[in-house]
Amino acid sequence: MMAAGRPHRATPPLLLALALCLPASAQQGADPTDPANRTGSAPAASGEAPAPIKAIGGFLGGLIGGDRNKPQIDELKPGAYAKSNEAIGEERDLAEMEVSRGVVPMEGFTTYANGVLDKLKAASGLTQIPGQVHVVASGELDAGATADGNIYLSVAYLRSLKNEDQLTALLAHELAHVLLKHHDSNVFTRTQKQLSSMLAVGMGTRNALDAIGGQRAASAALTPSQQKALGELEVMIKFSDLALHPAWSRRQESEADRLGMDLLVRAGYSHFAGLVPWLEMVAQWDDLRAQRLAEQQARKQETLNTLFASGQLDQGLKQTLDMGAGQIIGALSRTHEDGQQRLSDINAYFENVYKKEVPKVAPRVQAFEAVVNRPAVKGIADGYTKVFEARDLLVKGEPGPAAALLTPLVRSGPLAQHALPNTLMVEALKATGKRREAEAHLARAPRWTPTTWDVYETAALFEKDRGKRDAARQIGKTAFDRFSRAPSAYPRLIALYRRSGLPEDAQRVLGECKLVQADMRERCDEAARGS
Image 1 (tube, helix red, strand yellow):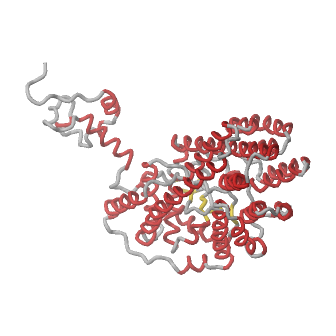
Image 2 (cartoon, rainbow, N blue to C red):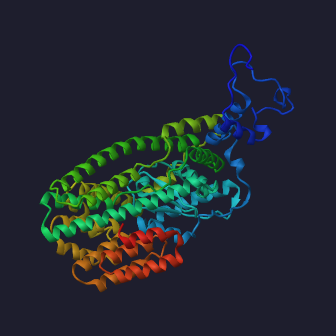
Image 3 (cartoon, rainbow, N blue to C red):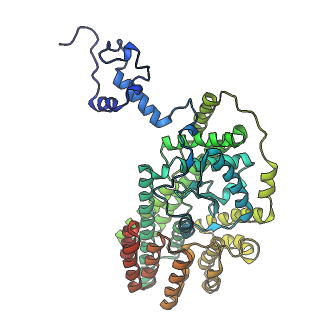
């Protein structure tokens, strides 16, 4: 029988069960010797949340934000670093990145950056921490760490960071994800599966483009404007900058920000000149990225509308292209947690934990500027800015201006043998009807470095179109060996052989994939089916 007055609010069963699983010290966060916290104590005052609700609220709050009143670094256990369960080996990890992106050789910068990373590793109190800093050919302001400890940052970052403290903030955040074993979490595993599915969609989308190309060859079904749209869509799919980092949870990002600050401070760097402006940069980039993605989505839809205008294309191809292009755009939109919120949270953490007791240190500008302004470093960074401009022009269907930007870059200078500008040049020449020039240019592809899988696939398809399937087979074998038989190279080789009209070779690699790359079986099957 309920007592008269305000009705009692029963605790929901799920919350009650969760609360009962909490340690006693977590219940209301109070001293267990306090009579109010003993079993059988008086009920909560009228209007106050029941104890289990308060307990679970505090518990969930801790999951999201952690204890903001003590250093995150205190949770690290001193001693030798135990490698992640997801690690595949530093060399294979690097080969994986080379397959999809191309790692830019920039020794003058990476030697310097690895020196900074070593200071952060020492500040952690752990030993035998793996991983090195590498630069990748991406136009996004992006960075990411892998389970093997390697930290990859985009070449675009080299033109945006202003001092060593900001570089340190970036590296400290990525190192924190490694030290906290975030790659072993369910969130990371789910993200990797999503990325694998997205890559499969991209493969299926290219297959649909091949089928449309076959229709065009057989019946001249496409108008000149549709052929142009087809080329633009191919470029968008092939040269999109996918995110370098997983979509970490809010809790993981908060932990990495806090541990990153602890590492930065212990290594003697400036919070105010490093972490704060870096997070402000992230917030500004998020806004710019959202605007660019909206424009890209509109351009993608316009391209698809043009491509489907005749009504002569198979409905299944239309659905595959629409879904594939849409998912690729969606993958590009993945980013870190909101930069402004992260900035607010880290400032609160600094106030609570450090109590303004950290000595102010001057930002380290001179050494940083000396490195990034070296001709070998600046020349590459500036050159890639033009490369990304040319890529955007190609996506917009302006191959002439794109070729004009690329010509001096591939003719001489630090980017003359780099894969991305040369591959874009091939696409620009093809789009302007200069197929012979494109073929001659592509013949030099094996000498390009850093290279990517797409270079070899493009070269193989050129040979297939010329009726030289043996040459296409050899290109595939060369690519497979070049990328050290990295796990993701298996489905890519299967797709290359299938698209080159070499089904027996594709089946042979499929059998090998199933034997030695269990995690890649599904993707290898999809590559063999062309779906």
